[in-house]
Length: 148
Image (cartoon, rainbow, N blue to C red):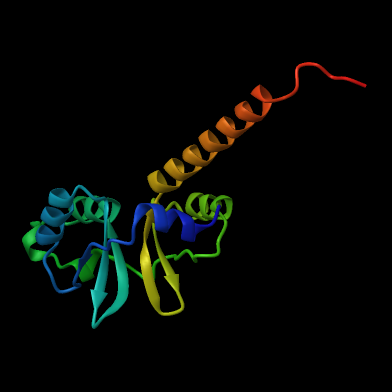
């Protein structure tokens, strides 16, 4: 299974925020949309990622409110990215190595979507379930009487 298949099933909906927006706005957006990440866009290009991890680190390290922090101050600039032709196992390995729960998927300069570790787990589970059904069907239809 390739990343492009996971994106196709999941959909390419992007939730974005600008680097000059307040962290408080980004937190409200993430809570309202029930998402764990936002793509940070500036001038039509991805400039970073904001996940709940960066939010928590910013709140821990600052003695100020989220109103005084901007997304650009806490985002991950130049995030690790995935590619559509990447295999799911390679994607999982990359996510584990980089400790990334969310990876933007890019093809050239085009941002196709964001894949979460949950999206990968769902896709693998669905693929295994399908394979399991196919094997059971194959075994069920196996001839019971083997004639020589």
